[in-house]
Amino acid sequence: GEDVEQSLFLSVREGDSSVINCTYTDSSSTYLYWYKQEPGAGLQLLTYIFSNMDMKQDQRLTVLLNKKDKHLSLRIADTQTGDSAIYFCAETSSGGYQKVTFGTGTKLQVIP
Amino acid sequence: EAQVTQNPRYLITVTGKKLTVTCSQNMNHEYMSWYRQDPGLGLRQIYYSMNVEVTDKGDVPEGYKVSRKEKRNFPLILESPSPNQTSLYFCASSLMRGVNTGELFFGEGSRLTVL
Image 1: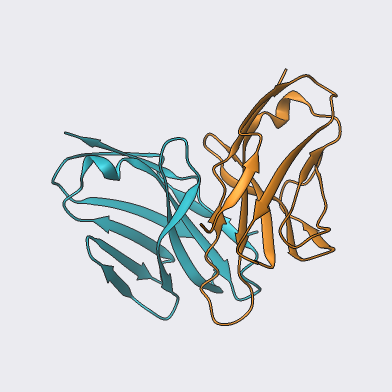
Image 2: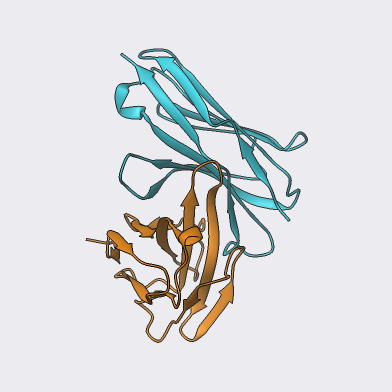
């Protein structure tokens, strides 16, 4: 079945850029997502990218998609302590978006 | 306020004692789903429902049941809980009709411990 992989942990200093990486196996992915989970809370959609796009920018967030290598990344510029959270990569295929596959999540720690 | 509400948020129970985790959404979403979150495994889908009276198995359905009698509610039932069902559970919903990105709206989670 589909697989989405992420590293488990990332630590950065406040003010630096964070880059969270994700690889996926489903070549028919249509939407790819980044969800953020703050401590004690559910997941919230941070941003998404459609599979025919290479890049999407939204304020401090930049999403890069390399469809050939099935690699997705999320860059957070000027990382703040409030960005400390778990970030989940997720994808859905053209088979129906009800089947969303999540990665293991990357815990981002921002050091003041 | 648009939201997905789960209850209880925290529960400690014993092996074999039936329990139900309720989930309700007020956004008139057709699609609802249950996930469990375990360290190092991310979110895994248990069951999902695309509309009233329509439910399907996800990746890890064993030991769980669901029902969808009304559009807004999607309870998760553990008929005979076992310790390997100790986990953090999330309910989510999504709009299906029209042009949309498939964004999932999540509840705040229910932490279940089975002794």
